[in-house]
Length: 111
Length: 115
Image 1 (tube, each protein chain N blue to C red):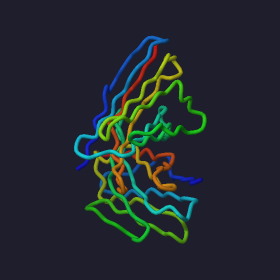
Image 2: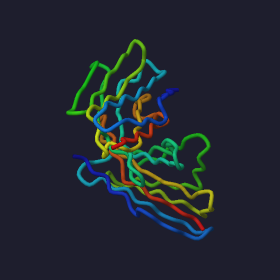
Image 3: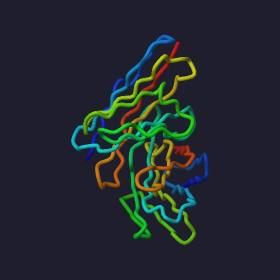
Image 4: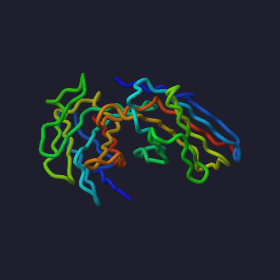
């Protein structure tokens, strides 16, 4: 089955700098890759997603890139702000519906 | 956008009792719902997948008789933790998707504490 590896597990950046989180997946048939932000005590919230027919997608300060050949995708957050501090999860869809999550990255933005 | 309402947000129960968690899709028909369990500082672990009107499909290692899932309508799924024990204490999260859609909307989670 699908296996998603996420790095780093923790990331600390200065406010205003950029943050990059990377994920690799194993199943070349996976075709949907969402990123979620989870704040303490809350459920995950979708922040951006990308499908396999696209190489890059951007939404204001957030962007995701996908390299199907290498089977990896990355989340880029620019001009980071304190409210960006949270745990971020990448995921890939396995088969028809099942989402497989990465291990998560705890992002801390230092003022 | 799509909204999934999950209740209760927190529940404390005594060991041996049962607890029911509800998950409702408010503005779309959720043909499939997923239930996850999350331990502190860990990722989400899929427990089961349920399609409306069908029996849930449980992941390996998840006890179907302990974690009862009902998905009787297109907008409501429930997870009942039966005969709860302290080791069942965890954060439970539901997710819903619509037929043919790629979107997965998550509920806000339920913190279960068994004492």
